[in-house]
Length: 199
Image (cartoon, rainbow, N blue to C red; front, side, top):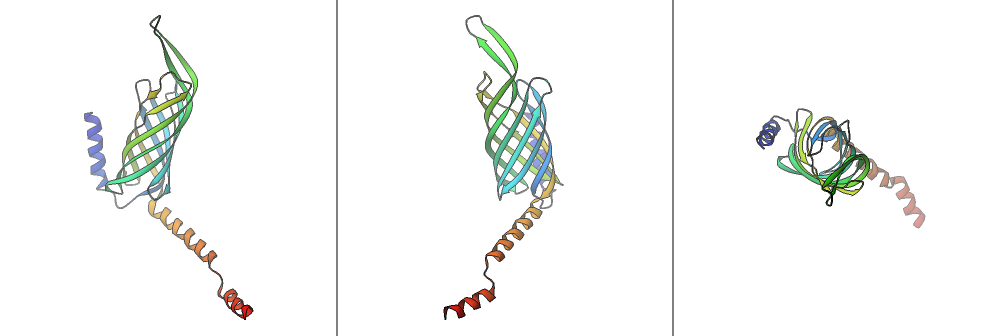
């Protein structure tokens, strides 16, 4: 718990050093931990709406658990838009180990390479610091098929490098909106011809 609190305080301090930088696209590493395995993975995020991002995760313990996750996350600022919390949901699939308890014999059967599908929830905090997004999250997974345990939680720490800043993305969005408005406007020559044709 002390390590988590220290990490949160560091993220809070780092957020004060960032200079108005938000992110549109970011990719990097994620370290995950639960009661069954420690995983290393790749995390990629893309802002799809003003306060909404889509995150894709591929992670593995290089032994018995390899999973992929797609999450839709909603962001809310804590102190500034560079230090925020988020929550969301998504789905997952992969290959996982499973432990089946036999209550009659009091034995546990351990299987692996089980194809699984599930539903994820996620809640976390993140800070954008000098071109890097550092985040800490808790991601419970609810099994729909392939695993005996219904729920497994995972704590994850991610460091993602910003590929497209929020300002760059906003600029592209505004440019597209202007182009759409311009295309929707009727040329003045057509308007004048329309007036004379009616008369």
